[in-house]
Amino acid sequence: MKSYQMFINGEFVPTRSGKMITVINPATEKVISEVPEGTREDINAAVEAAEQAQKSWAKLPAIVRAGYLKEIAQGIRENAEEIAKVIAEEQGKIMPLARVEANFTADYMDYMAEFARRYEGEIIESDRPNENIFLFKMPIGVIGGVLPWNFPFFLIARKMAPALVTGNTIVIKPSRETPNNAFEFAKIVAKSSLPKGVFNLVSGAGSVVGNALAGHPKVGMVSFTGSVEGGVAIMKAAAENVTKVSLELGGKAPAIVMADADLDLAVKSICDSRIINSGQVCNCAERVYVHESIADQFVAKMTVAMQNVKYGNPLVDDDIDMGPLVSKQQLENVEASVQQAIKDGATLVVGGKRANKEVGFYYEPTLLTNCKQSTDIMQKETFGPVLPVATFKDLDEAIELANDSEFGLTSSIYTQSLDVAMRACKEIKFGETYVNRENFEAMQGFHAGWRKSGIGGADGKHGLEEYLQTHVVYMQYNQNVK
Image (tube, rainbow, N blue to C red; front, side, top):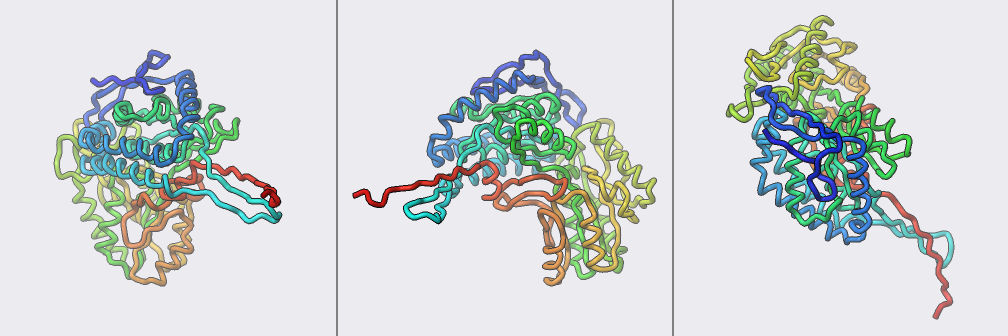
């Protein structure tokens, strides 16, 4: 069994609590590692180290900081296969997707490093003679990054890379369910030439370590990805110091299938979007609205698609589409959600129960029809391989149903009409809309939610701006100097 230590100020150190957290393989239910159960004192040590390192780190030219990111990216590529196995083992992600995550993380580091010569300030026209107004883009200071368990390795880079290239330092807290990959990342950092204290890693409970990080007076911003409840807790902890927060929270992405849609494309895209990572992705299709004239055809095709989904142990079984859910608790949550949907009148078409396996947190790919808009299955995030379907009469109704949600992260529509697609893009109130394709964002885009799906966003130049603050200088000069 593996045993890890925290990474603070360039050194691997034990926790002050002396306690450890066990990590379980969701496919086998066996303990695979133990990680430190961090304390407020551990967070304080990490933040202090980050604060001290930030003073000299910010003085380096951005292009020099970018070189360190590229060095770490190369280290990831050299260890990509082993990293993928670690992700698959602790999170249940299938190996092809785990490999994508590992390599995409390296690509993301390189991409953000390229902004070193691209982010810039402004010169603003003054109302006074003999004056220039300069707007500088400055680092915030110490960043706190609190990670989820569904894409745990990539989210390190999503928070770390833009933070570091813009002159900030960072303290990362990984999820309790999937911390191993973060410690493997720390090993790569330790072997690199990155200055001590620029990157720090503290594991532990969100209620202790996460709150301590968000509430620390020397943390300038907290970037959190996770549940709405977790985001609210982060905001409350940050409020005392008026600390900036950037939150990516839950989603209940609607997929609208119009009467003129390419049904085969729609079924494949929505099915892929629903079962990727066993349905544990906040931006993927969570509810489907299909035009009543093609509902029977859509359901028939989706039934076959869901029945053909193969699942198993990612480290043992080849040619599978999904693995287990991440934990027993997640399995129970999905099971309860489906049972409640059936009680609320939904019709079970496929699945609807735990998979017939001796061990592992597996749930069968599930299709539900006749789902009512007011029920939990259409309103609350399921986070599992469960697809509820309802019908609509016209585009007005479809848009109204899609927008009827407390969430606002991603959405999609399938149609061959440019007019319909353009109207949907203007009237669907979500941070992202995908037209005739699966829900999966690009690193150069901007991943941001509306309503309870979050505050701020990530990726691209707009994501980079999250890690910067402005300093405006009014410079008066003497024109008569010769």
